[in-house]
Amino acid sequence: MTRPKREPRPAAEPPTDDELDRLLRAIQAGDDANTLLDNDALVRKLGLPAAVVGHQVETAKDRRLVWGIPTGHNPTLSFTDLELTVQGRRFLSSRKAAAG
Image 1 (tube, rainbow, N blue to C red):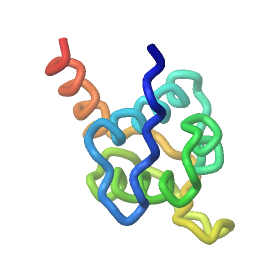
Image 2 (cartoon, helix red, strand yellow):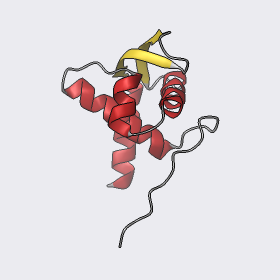
Image 3 (cartoon, rainbow, N blue to C red):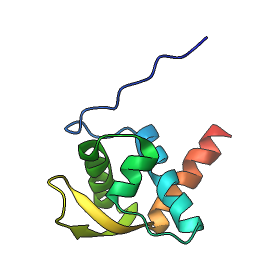
């Protein structure tokens, strides 16, 4: 049985912890590969619209889960050199512990 594809939440709604988890894991994969990511790379990796990724990254930055440099090359919220903070790693660890 094929599961129906879930549409991303509109950018105006705050991302869920599951959505932030997916975003942070993508950024962590970049960290682990010693590759700094930007919004464009996350759009390609996550398959989400740029506005949704921008909003999720901004929310993660507001919660101090990621660090990044704001850029002005997109009409949406855009950051480069994204990496997880200690709080971001703790967030992922707590989610993993709760699931396991």
